[in-house]
Image (tube, rainbow, N blue to C red; front, top):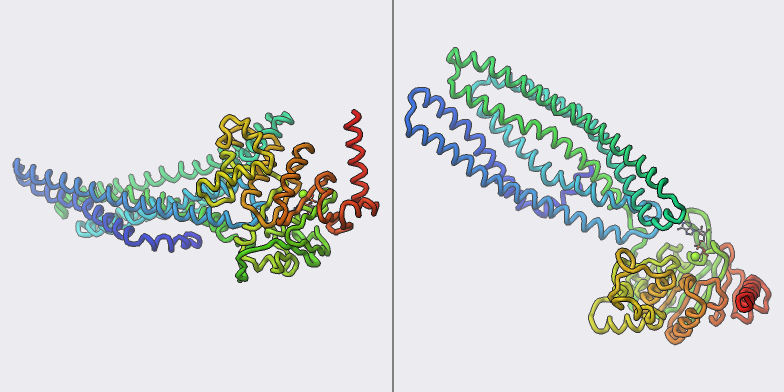
Length: 581
Ligand SMILES: Nc1ncnc2c1ncn2[C@@H]1O[C@H](COP(=O)(O)OP(=O)(O)O)[C@@H](O)[C@H]1O
Ligand SMILES: [Mg+2]
């Protein structure tokens, strides 16, 4: 129970209610073991003489006991099961909050489908421990103690005989427990695998269609699906053998008790009433014993699932505040000082020295894979640069409170992501919601990003849903929505990572013109491979294989005749060809 122990702090918070629920449980059990005891007196008394009054008395007593038991059983379930739901709620909330803090790197090494499976299936397996698991365990213990104590009073010999098969039940359960645990693990793993396949196949629906790979995807799913059934069959196999085994042992116990108990009753060593009550208690032990097998299983599953959840909870948020300096506002000066950066040991940026004054516009050009995206993603600490290499306003970015740092950076990533929500919500994503101002800010940002004319054509304007179950935007529209989202927060530092690549040059020109007014006073990083995008930048740097190989203004670089001049020449030529075509 190494992992389940981690639930203790949650359980402790609800201890008063759990205690109440357990009290109800004890009362329920006490009332239920009382019935056969009444039955015992009833049988003995009625064998002497049957009268109407006696019949009413005993049957009334038993009905009363059962009714009262029902009431307490209701409260027991209400309390214990709802507490388990509440703990599940808290744990799930904590898990999600933790997932939001994990860094980009975590999501690169873990598949979303797998995470989803843990957050849902494993979570409910853990919940089963807290609700049914604890309830049935307590119920089993209480019933066992109650019945065995009373059976002992009737006849220790008979009890000894009845307990032999019951002990065998425990052994049977333990034997199967480990096997069930292993098979359940493999079933869960396969379910996660299936989730991954479905999730990838659905999010990649367009690619699948475009390559006419539907049959392949179906076959891939079919194989995984079949494996899931096969593994489940292994689990069913275990259960299939376990339950009849328990039944057989129980039956044997009942036969033994009938045989010996019957002889004892005939010989007058126990009364008929005691014999009847004993049989009733033995029957009452059946369910708890079966529940025991079940409970073992619930705990095994819960332990395995909690292990998987704990693994996520223990993943450290690599990037977090670490004794930050009290920096409240940033101006936007960015500096890289002899920055060398590696992903998993492979250096992708080398000896980068670059100082960008607040308000300046710097363009980064270079071939794919030269490290442009990496460079800009180090500014808002999407990845962690070594200490003393990246500075904003003279503070190491590691020393600036994350909220301040990221709040000052408007980042438009190379790959656009929009939420399946309205255009307005997507643009207003980084804003704290307060009515009128948000409305104006959204409209303004959409204007600068040249998104407004498109929105005007949408059926419900800014209330149009985009993405899933909404209208699907073109690549350029998506990019402009993402740009508007970044502009809306009025960032001190604006980063456009090839963010206009899907926008046509004409619209781009409009955007850049608009940006220029916005840009004044805002440090801007323009990553692009289009000369037209970057030519007006205050400074252009050319990256190759992670090194800055050229730097200067457009005119300077063109006259230098290096990579940039080459790029410029080729793009002029392309334009020429386009114009004459
Ligand atoms: N998250 C990552 N993990 C490991 N390697 C990466 C990661 N992102 C990029 N790379 C590698 O780093 C190099 C630079 O990539 P990138 O910064 O995306 O270049 P660019 O934006 O100029 O195309 C490439 O060789 C790429 O394969
Ligand atoms: Mg890139």
